[in-house]
Length: 393
Ligand code: CTP
Image 1 (cartoon, rainbow, N blue to C red):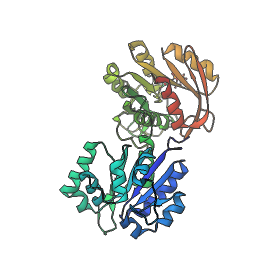
Image 2: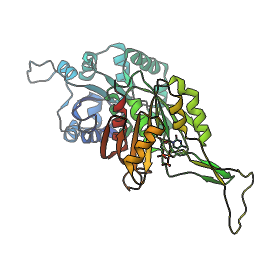
Image 3: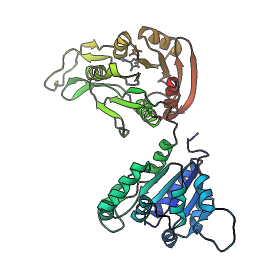
């Protein structure tokens, strides 16, 4: 279940042209199961009719500080208190400036000033307005006060120029909100995650590698980061985007992977070895491309067993390995757990089409000396969280 499920999110909509993206954002947040309440400024209602937001979000849209009909509720205080977090999107230079100065001259700014929950801004404005020293100062002041910012991107703006100030995409904002809503239960842990394959050269154009996509390791790195850990990601070649906020090291060969781990091993609390290091390398790496011939014999030599070596060296570190198996899943994994001196091993049957290499899902069995947990088919991100649950103190 999404960690936005049941979260009460107050969305403040101000009068920026990026308002059109907020309808998509609202639809995405609804799909995640969030409960929304919306405040629109007067400028926002001049761009999009509140009815559109009301229908999309299936919640009342608040616009007026003082209504014609008498009410005894103090609306801005109720709105400020009855939410888990607030998001201002698009956040114009004007609303950002007002909040930085404590100005409360409409329902949104008054509510935000009364709100003690986390508040995030998704700025959207012309590049010059964004780079103006006053705006930069206002953003810095709000950051200093503890407000969060979902940085705008660079791109084609409504004012017909290409530059900074384009509001973050709805998908990015949802991801940011999910992270913001994740319990920081791994704070204080320094976790190294390895991911992806390694490559062993045969000649300048050929190499030995394997099918690892890196998806499981990257999912663990992102989940650990979201949960407040300090994350070091050491990765072989993959096509994946590096999660921002991790300390990233790119490696190619098995030996480079070993050296990268060794550099930081002493200072980490946990090593999660999701990488699939090549078990063999060519005894000879040719300087020139090997020419075609009728038959070619390659002499392969064994690479070091990286996690096995760190299993021998470990002092305080928790070691979590993976077992990629095509038969005798639990028996083979238990043997690896013992021989490599691991604390836990995550065993998966890589011959199944929906688990193992190159897919977004996985099913696995987690083993330690004392326990066995069977994890049914789930997204790799969910599995990442289940693996990280082992580290909760
Ligand atoms: N591993 C490692 N160094 C290697 C090979 C594997 O550190 N040279 C790690 C993997 O990252 C994984 C665990 O060891 O965490 C088990 O990997 P796996 O490929 O399942 O097993 P192997 O030890 O390579 O044994 P086999 O291929 O014979 O099953």
